[in-house]
Length: 117
Image 1: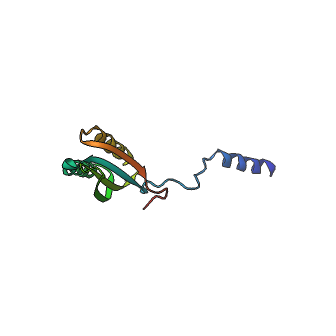
Image 2: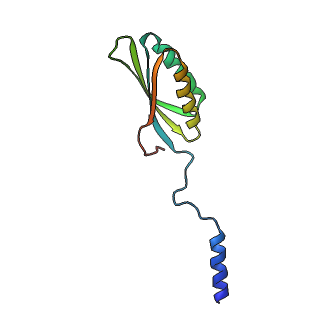
Image 3: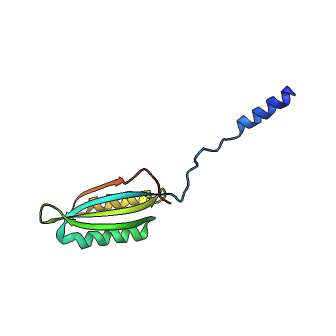
């Protein structure tokens, strides 16, 4: 009896335990990108953003355009839903925008810590 119980516990300890909250691949996290560029090049930068998002795994929720305090600068604010697989494409977009000559600054951050379905 004792040997059978020992063997049962021994075999149970060898089985990998499933995590309490397994990661779901379909969860998407919201991110916000803030891009400051010259006002004359706003259309070019927004077109570049749209092109990149159509080829990536990230989905744009909204894009807002607002003038900055200086008259020649404009701020583009973009809200994006991104899965874990699409996170690399979001990093590439931020890097690509940083290489643009007319872009003055690029900032990105997660909006909340709660993933969206």
